[in-house]
Image 1: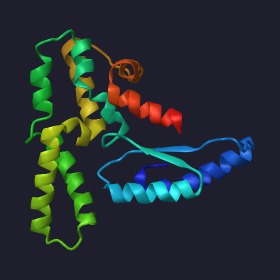
Image 2 (image 1 turned 135 degrees about the horizontal axis):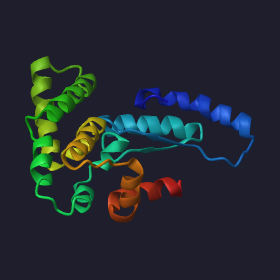
Image 3 (image 1 turned 90 degrees about the horizontal axis):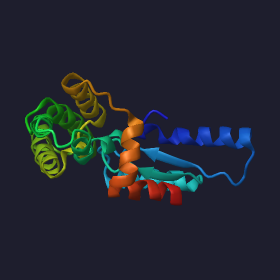
Image 4 (image 1 turned 120 degrees about the vertical axis):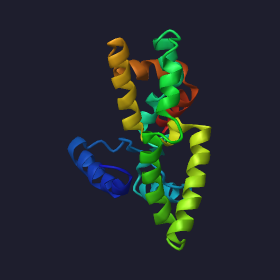
Length: 189
């Protein structure tokens, strides 16, 4: 549907599938990237979709691909190669390109949600919040697609290794408790 902001378009998809498949027992589930939307926005979307019998689940991180930023997977893949940790630390450093790029998007969301704040105040508060979240777990709030692309490029240049989404999903399905729990919620809907 082209992202969180287009969630209302799910109505048209639902209507089309109902007409084409003519199966009244069919369930409809919408998976949306959480991005930087707050709980209030997520609740409003969930309420809207529930009213038209579409169940909704949000990604655990900013985007679905953020699941693919699992350090343990790469450790197991590279058999504890000593080059992984410095690369990982550099990729997710506080003043790095991914941090700045991700913060720019976060700040846009923050300004939208706090329109009454002066720009300087909004920037300062947003930066504090973003740094706090980044320090806890950068893989949750980073631009997942760009981080994953950087990891794949590094693996290819350093080890001539290509990584496929299917390998990651298979590993996550066996080893990552958060991914397992998240996919179970989908299956239980």
